[in-house]
Length: 233
Image (cartoon, rainbow, N blue to C red; front, side):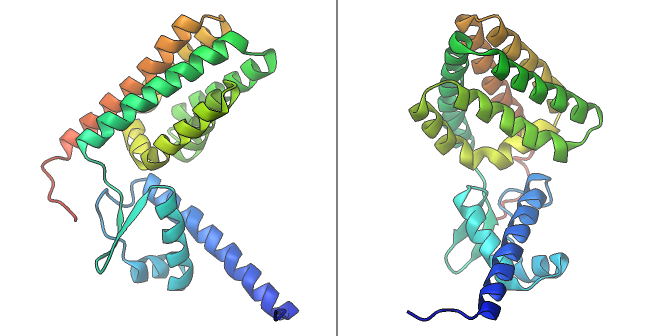
């Protein structure tokens, strides 16, 4: 086994660090709507915009394929993932069932510390919404939902939930920025938190299910409005 020299190790570290930075930036551009669903990614143009070579861009694209934001088509290139209406309905049906169960379980066992954390997320999202700061809002939104699922006390539920929502990041983001989605979503978050704080598993289950169904309907409305646009792939 050949050992790398210190200079070679440093070069690898720099390359890895750059790839991670580029991945985060490409993800941010996708979630902010810089690319449309189905749009082909021009690696050369993107590398030029980011001031880097194509290597880190390719690494970022491969990583984002794994998170469900990008799909690669052999001999054609990489494209922003696009779901069909049927896929959206099916995935959101499963997400609603799992998230509703998570809310129910958490309402039955929530602690004061967990309530404090949830309230902090909601306050942060409300502030970001008032400032129309989506870059601040969206990570808090993801963390809020993941915290509920992780705190429900069912590891299998959490694993299954993540497997279904991974491919929905882009679509969840789009549904939030359309038609006052941030404000509406925050009202739903407050109801979910109230149900959990009340220790009412039935109310919590219903509130969490309704939240996902509402998000689905907002997304379908966006997709319907875009139905007349020409296909990208």
